[in-house]
Image (tube, rainbow, N blue to C red; front, side, top):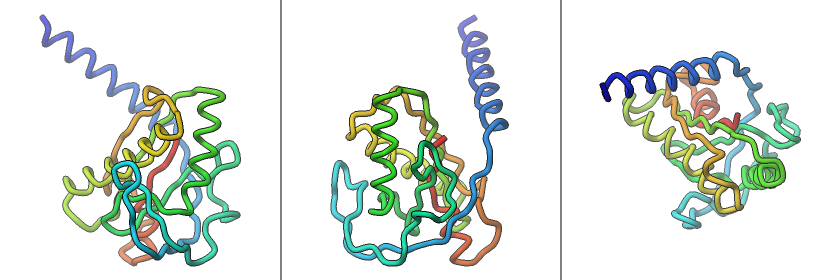
Length: 172
């Protein structure tokens, strides 16, 4: 009897996740930028510090939520937030503090690595964003972390530029 109850609950959760995924829209893709510098551990080592190279993502046409970027990019094989992501994440934190709504943090990876590894990496990236928002005071129960690994690429291809666009977390 309990097993049937668990199966029903799992089925309902799956349907809700499928419905939310089907209703989501694709975000536009920005030009990539790079960060140089050393990583320092801030709250379990998920925030990078250093000098930022390039022009960043401001004004790049990234889909926005409340005027702030909703897509946050990561370096190869890393789950450390880039410095250029922090300002937008602080804006999201303020918005979630003033007007609490549920959000989904979708972690992604490029095609390099095994499927299992990329699923775990996508989850670590989404968790890094979640941890940063929690440090800003956001209620953890408002955030759902999900990983798609390499399964939902933003760019199809096998160039460094394509891979860079696929190493991301989307806030939805």
